[in-house]
Image (cartoon, rainbow, N blue to C red; front, side, top):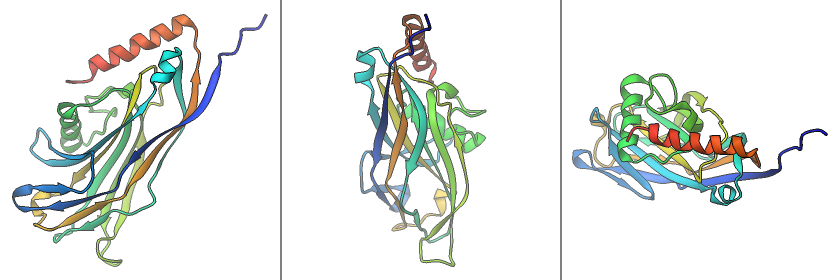
Length: 227
């Protein structure tokens, strides 16, 4: 008798990140128009902006189901507006993690990104590759030939493991790195468009042994993320 095919429950997971207007003040202060957007200072002393959201998977976990990502997308119908007195570039990363990253962990990510050019889960990063399901990196530069504040994408790349997850929640992040924050003057602004994280896939019913091993692995990965 052929092995029974595991039960599958297709779905599309969503996480919504609001638009934000960052206004810079004296002495490096930053006013953010929306939450949960925050700023942090990396271990190397540079300022970053970040946002955190989440996707609830507890309903699947209660049924002993494993989430498997099969398609991924980040919808962002808008443009970064770089209204800086001294033109500069910015870098942006968006990623989905199976573990929540507190401020200290985000500082490690910022430091790896700034000093080693390493985004989460890639070579040189202190974040385990398996914890990052999906990610996107982009670099923007001002385009003075277009309207004031217009930005163009200089380069873009994706990263992430797409590993199945037995976690109760997935966490979505956006982080922004400045080229030279010291050159930003009071009343300079940065408009950040809103976006929607989409993960298409299925919740599957694995065998008992496989599911227990995956649960154990998710706890191990949580412990190995630097605190």
